[in-house]
Length: 502
Ligand SMILES: Nc1ncnc2c1ncn2[C@@H]1O[C@H](COP(=O)(O)OP(=O)(O)OP(=O)(O)O)[C@@H](O)[C@H]1O
Ligand SMILES: [Mg+2]
Image 1 (cartoon, helix red, strand yellow):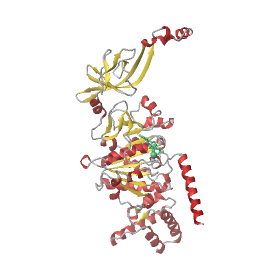
Image 2 (image 1 turned 90 degrees about the vertical axis):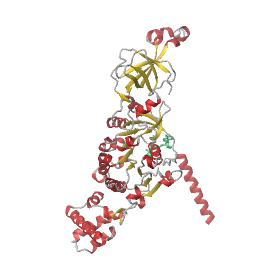
Image 3 (image 1 turned 180 degrees about the horizontal axis):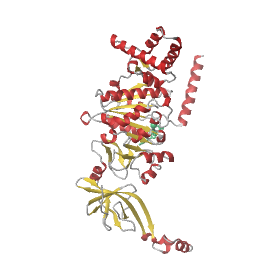
Image 4 (image 1 turned 135 degrees about the vertical axis):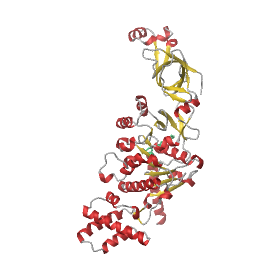
């Protein structure tokens, strides 16, 4: 980067200190958020511009400005332009010494020159890697923001922003980077819970061969892998004796399956109960309870998709739940597959994976009644224990306030895009370590595609411009004009068809 001087460190009442210094600007290329460096006794001191102030002695006193301006504008009579100066306030990040950043223990020297941060040093300072995941450009610098895979994902990632800020777009960029990795770099499996069909675009274009889409309506779970407790979570309403009876029945059934080496589904279980000599007051409720489970069309003789099929290295699997209306059914699917993935991963039967959950506040809600918290506990378990086993999650949400704090607080990397709701901003500031006032204010003014990356992923909070997608980004939100036009065109076409037929 340019090593030309940006200005000179000045001495003010409260700076320089070990944490702040100010410099008077001598270049037009100075921007808020930019990284700068200045040489000091301990080595090269790095910092980031947290504020820029403009001042002019001629305009300092209200009464004199008011008085002089009664005649003619001050610049006509005074050399006001010559007295204007700009001061940048810099937050010191640390001193770069022998290849690493250490806390600055002595202030910058007044009078020393300030330069734009050296590119190579800045990359090292922020923890960027040549072969890392390229999510975009570091703001104010011509540097690709390439994050180390482990640091970004291992201890989980949360992507938070208001609706339309670019969360899914960014997830698309992240997935592209994961799919672009070669075997020797280490490829993980990516599984996406897609509630709006926003990831179907991966099936066309350059990632088509690495993408598999599973239609939510065809998803099935194997009776063999369903425990009675899971069933009781799905549909409550049973009394304790009834629960005991069901647990016994299932156990017997599974025993039989093992013995005969055959698999059965819910229909067989129901038949067996119907034929049994169970008392009617027990049989009736159990059968109607099972009928309710059966109506969900979820339980079958085998899993679809199979877990090994769902998690393959360097492959994106999209569970497209956009056609399922029932939140409960969606939660059951997430809960079942998340559990199975974790179990299989613990045994080393599937590759390390990233489970990306869109609208995650609906799957791990902070204050959810028991019946709609079906997937919450497994998501929290993954958040707490997944890192040890290479089972990572990425929680995407536009309502962070409603997201389980247990899960959110375990996400050590956070990417925050535009958020304007003050409650959400406050919640994010509380749950993400390292957000200072500057970053907190900045997230309300971010534009679409601008993001704050904070936590484990980068050694220091940074702002990036998310890069353009290589694959197609399918959006659910087409403009009202387009939807209205399409509707009328479709109606006219239908009418014409009918006329032609008559
Ligand atoms: N980095 C970017 N560059 C260009 N366009 C972008 C970028 N990020 C987002 N967009 C555009 O902004 C729109 C909204 O983005 P996106 O669908 O990702 O929002 P979202 O945060 O997922 O919203 P929702 O919460 O409603 O799902 C899209 O039309 C997308 O094309
Ligand atoms: Mg989205």
